[in-house]
Amino acid sequence: MTTFYDVPADLLNPALADKLSDMDGISRPEWAAYVKTGIHRERPPSQSNWWELRCAAILRKVAREGPIGVNSLAQAYGGKKDNGAHPHTPAMGSRHIIRTALQQMTEAGLIEMKSSKTVQSVSGDQKLYPGRVLTPAGHKVLDEVAHSIRGQAEAAYPGLAKY
Image (cartoon, rainbow, N blue to C red; front, side, top):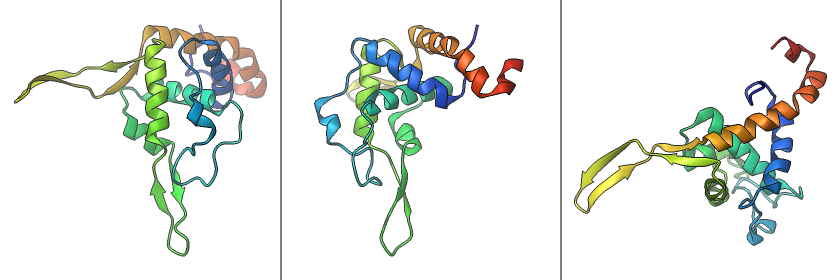
């Protein structure tokens, strides 16, 4: 069976975005038409399905690098901020977009918070969470999409047929 590790991201993400757009619970918020994806951008995204593409990319990144948190994802989707005459500085992507996408995928049952341990504090026991990981349902969705586009991947990248 083909896994999501076997298919390049440039083919997997658009197919996964189409699959996510059909799922319940994952939908573009009404504010998404006006928001920028980070402070390093000048305009909002021009693609019509940018929310689904971002959700697909986040799902793949959580699957590959999980447990991963919001700040690490915001750094991954950041860029260079133009400071005019001064040198460019690193800028983080929008944490609100990432957090909302993660919450939608959690409600859809694709990802979950991984708890590591419980610590005692003054206000009682508190759980510590190192980040989010993929659920078996999320792994199944990723692998189904990867299996469905395996033929396209082998046609686009002939060396993939060996694997």
